[in-house]
Length: 331
Image 1 (tube, helix red, strand yellow):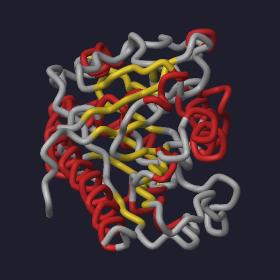
Image 2 (cartoon, rainbow, N blue to C red):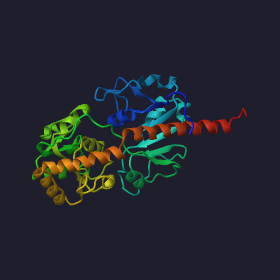
Image 3 (cartoon, one colour):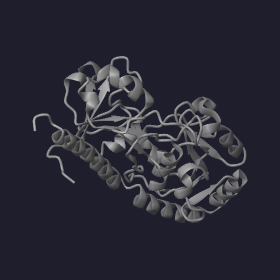
C-alpha cells in the first residue's frame, strides 16, 4: 500500500473519550471541534484524558477553513446533523469512515444502519456488532477490535470483593444490568465505580488514569451488562492481570473462557458460585488473571489497533485520490 508522506489529518468529534484517547496513540493527527457551549461532540480535549500534541482542538466556526484528509463519523448526530453544520461542501466529499461503537438497539437482527452510502466505509468494533447490524448498501464493512495499552498498575487482589465499573448504571437500567448488579450484590460484596453511582452507594467517578490502580486491588472484575459492545473497561481490567466475570452475551463469548481467563454464563447463580470461589482462593484468582492479561495483550494490542486504523485511513485516502485522478476531466 502507498504510504503518505505526511501524517494523515483526520477530522472527527469527541464522542467516546477513552476510545478517542486510544485512537490518538497512532501516527496520524486528529482534529476535534470545540465550542463555548460544550455540547455533545464539541468538548475539545477536556481534562479527563492526557491527549498528546497530535490531537488538535479547532473552534467549531473555523473548521470549514481548514484542510483534512478524511472525516471520521462516530454517531448518528455526526452523520445527520453535525457534518452539515460545520463542514463545507468540499470537506463532505473527502474520504469518509463511519465508526459504529454499539450493537443495534431497536432490534438485534432487523435494525438497518443509518449509513446507507456505498462510498463510506463502516467500521465496527466487534464481529458481533457487524453480525447484528443490517449494513445495507455499504460495500466495505470492516471490524477493528479495540486496542488498549498496558497499564502501569498490576493485579494485587487483596480486597476480598469484586469491582463493577459502569457509568450511570441505575439510570440506564436493565440493558446495562442494574437489576443484575442489585441481585448479585445481595450475596457477593461488590463495589461500584462510575459517574452517577455515588448517590446509589457507589464510589462515584474515578479519573481514567487512576482507574487501573484502583481496580487492581479487587479480587475480580464483574461486568453485569446484558447487551452492549465489547467494553473497554473489561479489557482494561484484563490488562492489569485481573479475572473477569461476565454474562455470556455479545462479543464476550469469544473473549472469556471459563476456568482459563475468567467466567461467563447466562446463569447468574453459576456466576455467583464462581465469584465465591474466587473470593475464597486468591492465588487461584491471580493465576486466572495472569491468563487474562496474556490473552488481552495478544488480542487487544494497542499497536495492532493503531496500525489497522492508520492502514484504513491511508487506504481510504489513496483510493479517493486514485479515483479522482483516473476520472479527471483534465486527462
